[in-house]
Image (tube, rainbow, N blue to C red):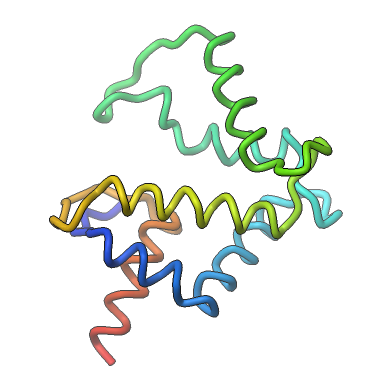
Length: 137
């Protein structure tokens, strides 16, 4: 984990850099696609969602959630990715929904920088690294 300063412009810049964003999406998709069939099943995407522990922690403190409520939240998130409702998520659906979510985060942040703790390899951490590399060049 790393402590970084992040603002909406960093996220938007990363998403708008199609080459960098597409490479990141392709790599993450390939990592999640455990059976290498070119599609993400609910189980494959669920592992990623659970690893984020967004719903099981509150400011870094573990919280106990109703397992049924948690399952419903994960199912709802999967439906957001599965645009054609066929029970799987293809690369384009994954890219489109990830882009939409990242831009929504950027929109919600406003223009003031925020200090955050980010997991290594997370989309936001990659966005910060992308911005830092552009500034260093």
